[in-house]
Image 1 (cartoon, rainbow, N blue to C red):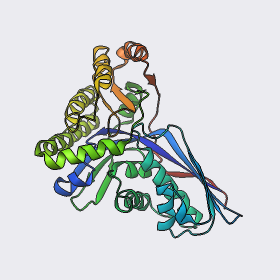
Image 2 (cartoon, rainbow, N blue to C red):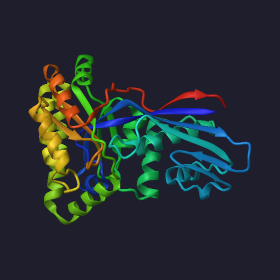
Image 3 (cartoon, rainbow, N blue to C red):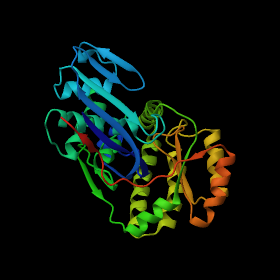
Length: 328
């Protein structure tokens, strides 16, 4: 049996510029961070004539091409694994919550499957193969952020060329700043799950017919660079303020980004000490990330609890996808 553990992520700034319709014209740039909420994938030999696939559903098939789960089916096809196999996935947090679980799933699955075949590949190879499956083969309306941050881990700056080439480097920040971020970034679950595909498709359609939407993405890229600069200078208060500007700008991309409840929760957070924040991922629900200095934590937590938003403490993950069990 082989088990991989792969982190989910919080998008810090510049998200959306990793989408092909933007970076092929303008190049993308963003800051993203892996967190200690994980996707676990186990892969094992199967001593029957069928493959057994266990996730939120259970599939048993006599041909891997018949697997319904698209990511598993295409990963097996890409790596030319035709024999019966058993694959199980378990996640700390369910999908549809804005933490990049799909990218984590694909990267973790590929990591485990390569080792299953006796192959040792780089994190960049895993990230690129995951992007290829999701973006090229399945034509999902996603970008390159999730697969890369899941593969590499850490707090990273990603730059994407117009040709889609990704340069990923750690932010040059001190451990004191990292500790301050872990203490002062508060994650709250809205209780709303949504399909990121719906929001991303709407965002793409609006951007392609309205030049102003592309201009907003350009502003988001610049804000992401300002966030990077603030963090590398250790100016976490300025980081929090930029988060607010980032969210107000991102809401202009599509009317599916926010809704009256999300707006109400955000305003409540600002009134109770948050300097800024944003919905994680494509928008429309999932997790809210807020930045608040320590003297405002109690007030903010109390206000969010009254709104029935539940806090999820976290730490950053610096390992990326890794094998935690290898018994071949």
